[in-house]
Image 1 (cartoon, rainbow, N blue to C red):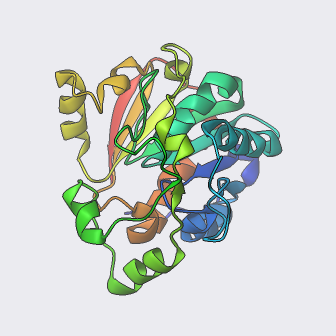
Image 2 (image 1 turned 180 degrees about the vertical axis):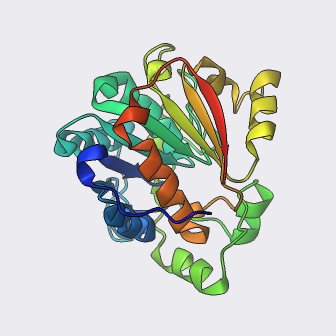
Length: 260
C-alpha cells in the first residue's frame, strides 16, 4: 500500500461516516485521524440509541436514524461522500431516497445497498427492544470475519459496543430503484474479493442483487476482515480520501476495479 501525502482540503469533499451495528462514531477514530491528515473534513455519526449502554432504545425508529445521518449531511454544507459500514448500508439506502442531491458519492464498506421494502433483521421478535452484540463465535458463523483483529481490539469492541435499537432493524427500508442507484458508488470489498462480489451480483444472490442496479460503481479490493476501520484503518482512510476527490465524485456511467 502506497502512503499518500496530505491533500489540501479544497480538492476533497467532506465525508460522513455511518457505522454498522453496535457501534458509535468512535469506531471510526483511527480512520478519521488519517482522513484529517489528508485534509478531509470527516464527520462520524453516532446514531440515536447508540450513544451509551444507558441510552434509551425503546421507541427509536428508522426515521430517527435517517434524521441523524441527514443532519450530518446538512452540517457538511455541500454534497458529501456518504460512507456505510456493514448494516449501515440499509440505513444509507433509506437516506439516499430522501437526500440523494446531498450525496456526491456513496461508499459501501463490506456492505451494499438494500432492496426497496427489505427488512434488515426480519428474524427479530416483534416485541424486541434491542439487538445485543452476539458472541464473536456467532459473528464468525454468520460470515463476519474477524481477520486482522487482535485480542486488545476485540476486548475494546466488546467493552464499547452498545445493543442496537431493534426498531430500525425491523422496519422496511424505503429505497425505490433509480434514486440511490443513480448516485456514484464505491464498493470496498473486504470479506469477499471484488471478483466474488461480481459473481454473486451476476447470480442474483438476494443479498447482492441491489448492486446490479447501481449505474456507476467502482470496486476496491481491501483484503481483511469485516471491520477494516480497525484492522486496516490507514488503507481504508486512503481509499475514502480518493473517493472524496472532486474529480472522482462526479464521474458517471462507469465500472472499474482497484486492488489494494
